[in-house]
Image 1 (spheres, rainbow, N blue to C red):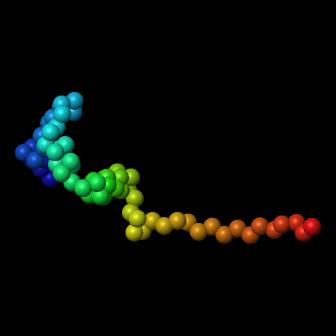
Image 2 (image 1 turned 135 degrees about the horizontal axis):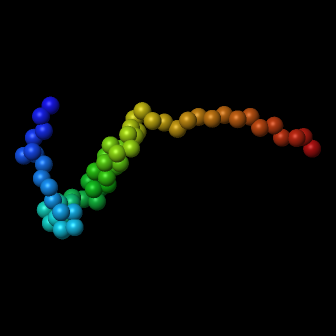
Image 3 (image 1 turned 90 degrees about the vertical axis):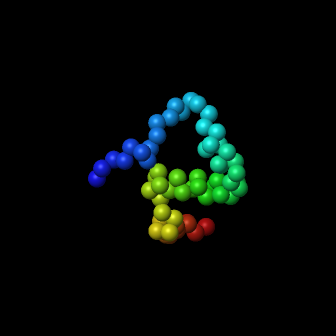
Length: 65
C-alpha cells in the first residue's frame, strides 16, 4: 500500500480553521450530534446494533418475620 501525500495536509492546530468552523456551523445541531456519535463509536469501537446490556438475574431471599 502506497501513502498518497496529496490526500493529507499539515496544519497548525493553534490557527483558527475558518473552513471547518463554517462547515460545522452550517449544519443543524442534530447533524453535529450524529457526526459526534459516529466519531465516538469509531474511537471506542462501540457498535450499538450488536452491543446490548447484560442481563443479570439474582434471587434474593429475605428473612421471614
